Structures are given as structure tokens and as C-alpha cells.
Length: 339
Ligand SMILES: NC(=O)c1ccc[n+]([C@@H]2O[C@H](COP(=O)([O-])OP(=O)(O)OC[C@H]3O[C@@H](n4cnc5c(N)ncnc54)[C@H](OP(=O)(O)O)[C@@H]3O)[C@@H](O)[C@H]2O)c1
Image (cartoon, rainbow, N blue to C red; front, side):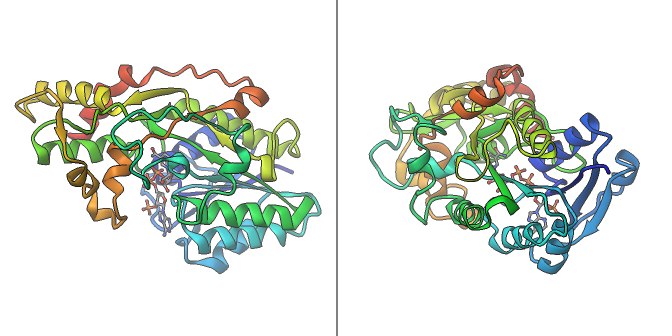
């Protein structure tokens, strides 16, 4: 029988690209998507994909769908607790005696240093490894970004033994065009472009040397594909449960270098008069992106460090990022924000 795969969040940037990747690479898999909004052309684009209608609070629907899946790839909202609990409940109640696999999308916000003032606006020398720092990453304080759901997954994995195999994919900032049926843009550039146009110039706080890791969406997809294939094959060749924690970073960039590059692009489009980055008070940067309702989110987005090294995928899968780098795709990513 064909392996059954349930994919959530597939009208989103990451989940949509996961759907497109899995369907194209494995037409032999039996794929179902859970969606609250079904794009008009979904059937035409993916004629063999089954659709379950529901949102992340439709917990009975989610559990039922997960109970029929061999592998669940959960995307879309890394912090939503009812949906992850429902997926886990479905997977551990599968009629099949083989393990159910959960591949969950988290994010490196969990190791970002935005909560303390020490390195805001300046380089933090700490680079996190998903092997050497695993103990610290998997015991981050409750308030850190994405920790609530990471914790639910890690607890469920330790309680359910061979019945449930989990992997947490923890990408840094992602760039490059997605190719799913809905959103095809990542989050950083639209948010930065909007704030730049409000300020009237590209900006940074402090020295602007705070640095974050990045990955191209296509390089991230090589990680997803390896994990889905390993799950379908019964789990061999990948780590699951406590060790199933995967960074995917391929490069780094400082806030000031990004500000310089985006400033030039926006000036060339007549969107701002001065391309030169402006130093902004940290207190002003902190309050940016306020519409998201997360206190100090501006500090996370523009003044924090989040530096990660993808040791696990390198060790297990021989990960070699091949996609164009951040600077090569930046113009297209920024121009896409202006459409
Ligand atoms: N993009 C990045 O750079 C990045 C990096 C690391 C981690 N992450 C994390 O990854 C997650 C997804 O990011 P993304 O950029 O792919 O987001 P996105 O493009 O906004 O996609 C969100 C997806 O989740 C679905 N969704 C959200 N809430 C839902 C609900 N209550 N019920 C049903 N479906 C729901 C959306 O469906 P609709 O189309 O119906 O709205 C859409 O399919 C986020 O939690 C983010 O923090 C993102």
C-alpha cells in the first residue's frame, strides 16, 4: 500500500512548498492536506491529493486525519497547542502497529537572544549546535518562542516509545520563493520593507552587527524530503524523539548588511530617498511589528542574534546547501514585497 502522508498548512509559504516537493518527488505517496481555505486551483494542480477541511481548532477532524496517516508533516503555526495535541492523539491511536511519524515545523526563535539586553544590536559569539547544545535547546525556558509546542512533542515522544517517532525541524529565517498553492513569500522581507517605509530609511539598532542565520527554502526542502523519506522507510537513517531536532541554517547575515542591501533596492525603486541605513533607538525598534501582538517582537526581528549550525543534517544526510545565497535572491525577494 502507498504510504499515507498528512500535510498541514499547505497554503502557507513553508507548508505549501513541502506539499509541492512531496507530491512532485513522490507521486507514489498517498497525500492528504488539512486546510481551512481551499485554493480554487488546488485540485487542478494536485489532482491526486485528498483534502480534509478544518482549521487548527477542529481537533476531532485533525485526530481522525492523523490516525489514518503514516507520516504527519505539520506546518503553519509553530505555537498552536490544540492542533499538535490532536495530531499526536491521532498518530498514537493508529490501528497499524508500526510507529506513526510526526515532522513538526518549529523555528530558531527558540534560541534567539532578544529577551535579554546583553547582545541586542551587537554580535553574540554564541552559535548553537543541534548536537552539542541539544540538552540546552530541549530545556529552554517556557516563555521562549515555540518552546510550548516543542515541549509537548518531546514529552509525547518520550511517553509513547515505539508508537510515536517525532522530528522537530527548526529553520532560521528563510528566503527565496516558495512554490505552493498559496503564500509564496517568506515573512522577514515584507515586514522589514514595511517598517523601512514607515521610518523612511533602512535601519538597525546599536552597532547593527547582530547576526541571524538564514536558509533558502529549496535547501530547507532537502531536509524535509530526507525526513519524510526516512519516515516512510520506517525511520532508519534519521534521528527521532529527543535527538530528532534539526537546524537547517546555511549562512549568516548581520542586520546592518541586510539594511544596506535592502536600502539600495528600495531606493532604486523610488520607495525611499536615502539608501544609507539609519541607527534607531532600541526602544523604537522594540515596538515595531506591534500588530502581531508579541511584546518586543521588533527587538527579535531586527536587533537580536539567532545563530545556528546544522550539525545533525550534515552528519546524517551530508547536507550541502546548493541554492543561491541570500544576497543573490534579495532583489527578487524585496521586489516581491512591492507587488
Ligand atoms: N518563514 C520563515 O522565515 C520561518 C522561519 C522559521 C519558522 N517559521 C515558522 O513557521 C510557521 C509557518 O511559517 P510560514 O512562513 O509558512 O507561514 P504562512 O505562510 O503564514 O503559512 C501559514 C499556514 O498555516 C495555516 N494556518 C495558520 N493558522 C491556521 C489555523 N488556525 N487553522 C488552519 N490553518 C492555519 C495557513 O492557512 P490559511 O492559508 O488558511 O491562512 C497557512 O497554510 C510559523 O509559525 C513561523 O513562526 C517561519
